[in-house]
Structures are given as structure tokens and as C-alpha cells.
Length: 394
View (cartoon, rainbow, N blue to C red):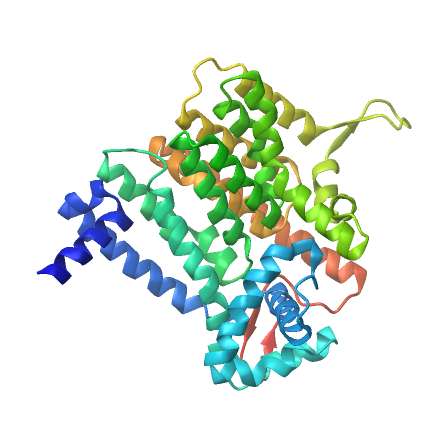
């Protein structure tokens, strides 16, 4: 009886008290969970994008050299993958066998060697298990962000996440690591809901250090949590402390500026590319996303009674504005999903509109990338890859 009671308490903590006490909702959650996990395991062994291999190659190089500062642009992300790969290498022979391939410097040779490895399916699954762990953590964190005391709506949020095609595509087909920073961002939002303002901004700072995208919701989170003029300054400084810490570390260890490096990448160009020239031949332009983002933040600032639900709404608005205005890689869509799954439950009509929107963006992205690759004459693989024993589909 003690063991049963223990597992019941653990289950109640994981699935929330509301769902646990509603046996019908709890049974449905178990069903959705098992089906969702099955779908994920169907895709895990077969599909991946070249960046997954690059990510673990950087981790392998870190293990081989003992230099944790090997990838200063993604320092924390690389550390997480390095620790995970080290554990896999220590306990799984298949990963240990493929380790020399991960250390291969030539991208094409390593790509072909990886795909022709006998245990490639096993290794791909193990590589993605890390993302599955964070995926599971996120789906149960989202349950706590909205619809308190309403088990049915919480269950709908869970359903929209676990069967979400964007989540499944980004994590188990495209195989990108954004879910790690999203997990940290969700913790920051949950702390904000509990009015733990300093901890919330500190955790968000870690999220920004992991991935730059959480900085988009930093202003609205500060405006939501600040109670005094001093709070605006203190919370803002805490929010950028993670980025500042990585900046100082990269400067002293590499004599390079992380911020300047980020500003010179194509990812920052995505923000500035959509623009309107004020006059023909003029160098003066209006950057569309920056203008829209400023209006969004100012509109939130002028709301008198800022509730947590409104904060979530604005999180969705910000990321949808980015997706709707700027060029982006497919994995960037994942940042809008935690906010959207909650909005879908509030207004189901938005569900169909957004799938249509994502479908158009997905088609445009695939078409645009295909044209770019053909026109540039490169031989790099397209969009995603499916590994087989003797061949790869590009």
C-alpha cells in the first residue's frame, strides 16, 4: 500500500492535481501519452538533419580535447550535449564504436561514414532521447501555465502538445535542440505565474544564454513582474545577465565578442531583412519586425491590469509576428507552440488558421531552400535525411 500511495503522489505531482482527481481525464491522458510516445519512437531512428550530427561532433570534440570552451557561441548547449554524449559513450557500445566518426573533421566523409554505420538507427534514437526527455518535461510544465482547476482544458492543452506536428517534426525529424531552451523558458514563465519575479528573470537569463530567442519576451516579462521603478532596472539587468556572462567568458577565453558574433550571423539578418525603404535610392529604411515588435511591447506596457493569461497571449503574438514577418528556419516555429497550444484551447478557431499559416510557411521554406541549393550549386543535403543501411535520401 505504501508503494501504491507513493506512485499516486508522484503521478499527482506530474499530471497536476486536477487531472489526477478526474479519473476520466487521467485515463485519457494515459492514452494520449502512450500514443504520442509511440509516434515519437516511430520517427526517432530514421530521420535527422545534418545539424544533429554537427551538434554531437562538437560534443565529441569537447570530450576528446577536454576543452569545454570549444564552441563558445553555444557554450551551454554544447556542455549539455557533451555530458549526455559522455554518459552514452560510457555505457552504450554502439555509441562508443561510432565515436571516431564523430571526430572526423571532413563534413562529407563524416556524413557518409555515419550513415553507413551498422548501428546508425540505434545511435540516432539515443541521440534524440535527450530531446525526448526535455519534450516530456515541457508537456507537463505547460499543464501548469493555464486553466487552473479545469482538468478538461488542461487535458486539451496536453493533447495539442503531444500530437503537435511541429513538435514532432522539429524534435524527431529535423532533430534540433531548441526544446532545451524552451524548457528553461517555461520554468521562467511558471515562476512568473507564482510571482517569483527575481527567480523568473534569473531562469530566463539562463534560457537566453542557451538560445537567443527568449530575449524576445524579456521586455513583456519585466513589465508584467515589475512593481516599482527600481524593479524595471533590476529585473532587466537580471534578464540580460546570462548573455552578459557568456559575453565576458568568451572575451576572456577567446578574445572574441559573442554579441558581435551573433549580430553578424544570418539569424540576426532574419530580423532586419524585412524592411521598407523610405525613398528610392535612400539608405533610410524602416525595419518591419522591429517596428511591429516595438508596438507590441508598448501596447502591453499600457495595459493596466496585466494578468498572466495576457502575458501568455503576448508571448504568442511576439513569436507569431516573428514567424509571419521574418525569414526563419523550421525549428524556430517551435518557440510559438507553448503559447499557441493554450490559445487553441481558449479559441479553437485559431487552431485551423495557424495550421494553415504554418503549412504555407513550411511549403515556402522547403521551396525556397531547394531553389537556394540548386542555384548555388552546392551538394549539401536538403531539409532532412533518412538513413538506411547503404544509402541516404537527400
